[in-house]
Length: 190
View 1 (cartoon, rainbow, N blue to C red):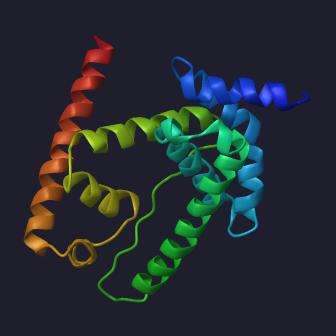
View 2 (view 1 turned 90 degrees about the vertical axis):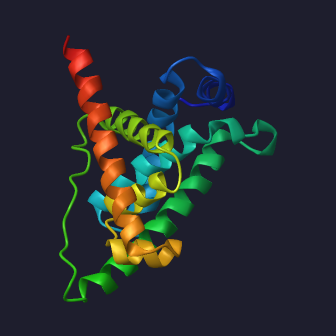
């Protein structure tokens, strides 16, 4: 399929203004390969796929800030991808340092299977929206603990909060998210 300037302008309009997530799907189909190629230059495939997902989640959440007069949507997405690649490399360095500490128990989160990547991006957007709905600093604490896999002591230090406060926020927030998702799942099954 040929992608000329008119096609890309249509994708950009659908991405920014379109109803539902059709614009996300179109943008993903058009630029995910490019983002993956950039990420593969800096990391292993599984991590690169995670960066692609994070890039499109970030782009979708901040689509209102895209200015077509400043440049094409693809270039804007590539700028976001470069930031996500840099973030990943910084976080990998931090994880490596933490892995050397004897008190750290490393866990792993499964990434998308690759079979339904747009679905995984949509799910990640739903998670981000749920985290935004719990407010701050709870959303930041849950992101740091669950998505970035940081120990509570590191979160407390980064946010300049007592560790007990971080633990309380984390416990209550995870319980609220679990209850919300279980309620939504039960409603969906009914």
